[in-house]
Image (cartoon, rainbow, N blue to C red):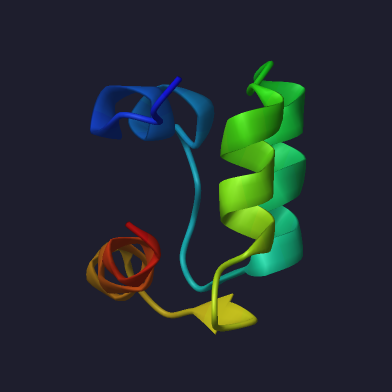
Length: 63
């Protein structure tokens, strides 16, 4: 299974930036994210993201 942008938006809905990687993982877990999505978030290269564009850029480096 591949993680889609729609899945990311669904599982990370309502986040306030700046946000830490740990906060991303926690929110995704609370919203029932798959193991694959959680692993993707845990593999992000930065510990903190100041805005959605910065998070999008970091996610793009993983694909």
